[in-house]
Image (cartoon, rainbow, N blue to C red):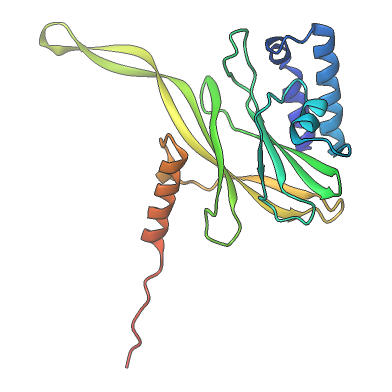
Length: 233
C-alpha cells in the first residue's frame, strides 16, 4: 500500500521533468514507468551498470544524479542505494513533495524499491540532509531525515508611541528530524520493510545540521543512561 501511495505522489511532479529539459511526452511516459516500478516493487540491474546509470534508466523524472551508497541493512548482495526526490520549479529550486528512495539488493542484481515519504511540516517542506544513527542504542542504525519548512506564524510587534502592540504575520523557518527504521523482512515476500518511527523526541526539534542532531542524541543518551549502583554489603 505504501508503494501505491508513493506512486500517486509522483504523478503530480510533471514540473520536475521540465526542469530537466524533458519534453512533456517523455515526461508523462517517464512518470508512468516510475509508477509501474513502484507498484511492482522490484527492479533488475543490468550487468556492469554503474549506480548512476542504473538509477537514471529507471527514474529519469526523479533522480538528479546525487546518491548515497550505504549498508543500512547488512546484506550479502551489497549496500543499499539512496536518493531523494523533490519537485523543482523552473528556477531549479526544491519544493514540496520530498521523498526518499531506497533500493535494497535482495538477490544478485535484483533490488526491492521503497519510498520513504517525509511528512510535511509547513507550506514548503524540504530535505536538508539524511544520515544514519543508532537512535535507541539497540545495535541497529536508523535513518534520520533532517527537514525544514517555511511556516507562516502570527507575531505581536511593538509599534508607535507607547510600544503599542500590533499583530503581524510573517514566515519563519521550522526544522525537524524525522526517523525511519528497518523492521525486518516481510514474512510473505521476503523483502525488507521500513517504516517511520513517530516517537516524540523534542530534544531534536529546531536543530539545523546532522552534527547538531548527533550531539543532541549523545547528550540525551548520557542523561538517560542508567547509573551503576554500588553493591550493598
